[in-house]
View 1 (cartoon, each protein chain N blue to C red):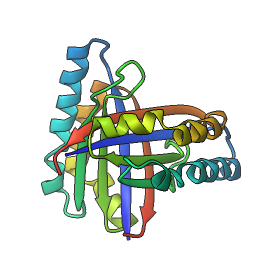
View 2 (view 1 turned 135 degrees about the horizontal axis):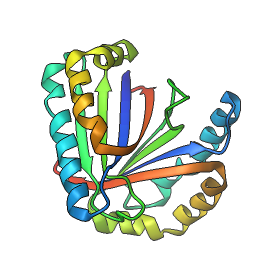
View 3 (view 1 turned 180 degrees about the vertical axis):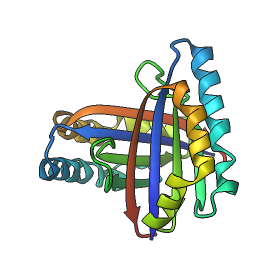
View 4 (view 1 turned 30 degrees about the vertical axis):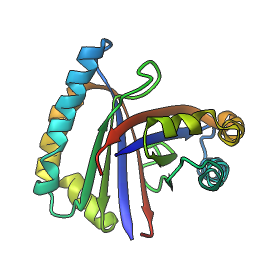
Length: 102
Length: 102
């Protein structure tokens, strides 16, 4: 079983360069979490490449062994610190959390 | 290389049962595409399980060999038919498209 946490953000900028820069700053805040949070098994970060007029800017997929593993991440101080970096950089955020059999 | 298309929807309902039903109808419209669209290599559909007050309802991840494979999907008649089923069932939609090295 895997518990997957998927989050998308639209960043707080309108121009191509600003959106790219803020997306890269969010990606840089997320990247260390894989080493910092022991229950985070896999992570993939993607910065949007097409249709910027309708698409969001960045997505992350995080996999845990179970919901308890996700909750360890949710409450982990390094996640909270990353959240403080990410929060002022986005305009909207949407997440889906679900379990599936591998 | 993989070209990944990730889409999240918030469905057109407010109550738990309505959201679940519409999410399952969207999932059922998406599921056959894996067999119908030859360039669609992998697909994973997830229906949200926690924090419905802030989360979206459903997410799909679709993998193609490259952007051209995604464009075959985008224009495929079975995708367009699925879109016609999905469109009246959601309130908002957000996507991110990106390439990564496997």
